[in-house]
Image (cartoon, rainbow, N blue to C red; front, side, top):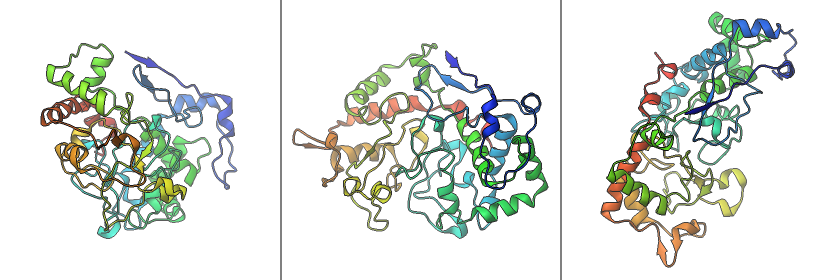
Length: 354
C-alpha cells in the first residue's frame, strides 16, 4: 500500500520569491486551484520521508507540463541540440545508456557518467560529488558546464521569452506569469519530483503485495544484506554518503571527487554512493563508467580494490581488502539486483518525451 500525502496550496505561497524582476500581482488561490490542479504525489509506504519541500514548490499539472518540455528541449544548451533528456534516457532509468561519460554540446565528452534520475525528492544532495544540495539548484551545474550544455541563464531566458508557447506555459504554471530563472528551475523540479520508482518486484515483496522472492533471489538478498547493505542502505539503496571505493585512478580524468567541492584532503576521490534501483539497466557503472557489466563490478570489489589513504574502512577490515565474493555469490547478487528493476517506471508515459 502507498501512504498518500496531499499538499494543499496555502496562503504562504503568496510569498514565493520569483526573482528580482517579479512585480506582477497574483491571481486568487481559488482560481489557481481550478485552472492548475496540484498533482497527486504519493510516498510509497516502504520509503523514507521526503527531503524536498513540496509546500514551497507543489507539483501542478501545468508546472509539470512546463518542466517536462524544458527537460527535453535543446534550447537550454548553447548548440540548441543537447537537452537534459539527451543524457538522461527514460528506457534506462534516465541514464546515458552505453555511454561511458556524458556527451555535451558539439560532441564534447564530459568527465563523468550520467547518473540515473529517480526518487530525487528523497535525496539530500546531487551529482557524484554532491555539488548541489537542493534539487532546484541541481540543473544549474549541467546547464552551465562547458562540457555539458554550456549555456548561460540570461541566454536561455531570452530564448524562452521569444517563444510564444513558453510564455503561455509559464503564465499557466506560475501565479506571477514570469518567464525567469527561478520559475524555470522550479518547473524542472516539479517534473523530477514526480519521478518515483517504487514498483519493482523488491517493492512488492516489501509491501506484501503478492510477490515472492525465488530461492536464488533470497540467496542474493542474504549476500547483499551481509556484504553490501552498509553503503547501499534502506529502500533507496544508498546511504547518500561519500566514499572512496578503491577504484584505481583514471589518469585521463584525474577526478578528485568530493574534494573538489569541500576542498578537504579527507574527501579525496570520494564519490556519492549510488542508488542500486534499476541497476540492471543503468550500465555502464561507476562515476567514470569504467565497468560495462554487473559481473565486472563484483569482480572489482572481490579482487580489484586499491588501497589508498582515503579508502573506505569498510573495504579494509581484518586484513581483507575489498569484499570477498565467490562466483556463486556474485551470480546470486546479480539475480537479486534484477528484482530492483521497475518496468512500470521505465515505461511510464508521463515522463516520456513523445
